[in-house]
Amino acid sequence: MADTVDQPGQLLITCCAAPEEDHRPALQALSPKHWQELIALAYRTRTLPLLAHIAEGADLAKPVIAQLHEAARDAALHALAQGRAIARVVALLREAGLRPIALKGLALAYGAYPDPSLRPLRDVDLLLPHDEVVEAQKLLLSDARFSRPSGAGRYGIEYGHQLPEIVDCESGLMIELHHRLNARGWAGEARLLLQINASATFAQLLGEDIRVPDEQTNFLHLVEHATWHHLFSNGPLLLADLHFLVTSHGPIDWASLQTEAAEMDLARALQLVAHMVRHAGASWVPADLLTNEFPRSELLDSAYLALLDTEETARQHALLHRVISRSGGTGPIHALSRAVQPDPYQLARLSGRDVNDPLKWLGYPGWLLEKGHRYLRSICDAEIRAASCRKSGLQQWIIGG
Image (cartoon, rainbow, N blue to C red; front, side, top):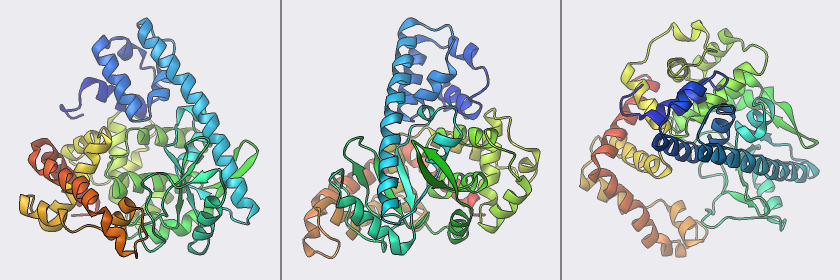
């Protein structure tokens, strides 16, 4: 693993890659300083409840044990509140004749992990057909239990792969209504979208049957989401997701999965993820997934580093990465030209206006401050520039460059 990944980061990645192995000796050997760094990192990456579960029974300092017990308790309460909110949303949509498919995390939390509290949800992604997703949005926003969060955009299905976020007022859970999977030029999107709809099964949540993708399809979506969509900045929870998805159900048909990945332009993404999790300590990876082209060690290192990105760092990487990939340069002229050409949908979000409303330009000062400042900070920071170049390398390898 990359030397630039510090000891807490390496240990967290290892714990997530093999969460049912005994990591207590390594955890017990951590210094108090490294324990605080590990707890802060796990909190930021939504892996603290899982870390508390892995560390159960370890001989640790009392303050650390107290922090882990508190995290586990809070996660249990949070999971209950989230579960109630999700069941409420799905029931409301079902009563209107709408049957969304809950993507990625929900099926894992309630069908793969030993306990849903070990897999906190940042939001719930609900996939609906184009002709139903706007109806679902109107239905939720007409109910006083749901609202638009502060700063949510105002646009329809013409922009991106999902509609603006909706928040459950009681629990704070974010609800994202999707009509697509990816808006970043991935050629396999239509193929995976068809497979998700064709292979959907059911998960049980507080008495509510919720449609979810089957295990093999969810595996492919997790690979796509981590690679084409986020270039691994979605965090180390990915590693635990794959572990529990594979080990909690019947065996995956790996030959079929590889064929499907090739048809979806995910062959290299699958290779990179397989080598990455195996190198981090996962034992579930079949040999067949490791026999094709081996990613260079620096690509694996870049992926590990990206897993530990902060949210702000990930945004800076993404902005500078787009400049690198589109213009081939990272100088201030490129950054300035990007900074003064705002996205109309972002202006609408910041101004609270519709995208077709000329008054959306009231959001321009905020856009310029937010985006321009981030661009300039990015190009002036050598570490961010280096990380963005690494991500460009990751992307080029994944797409076959």
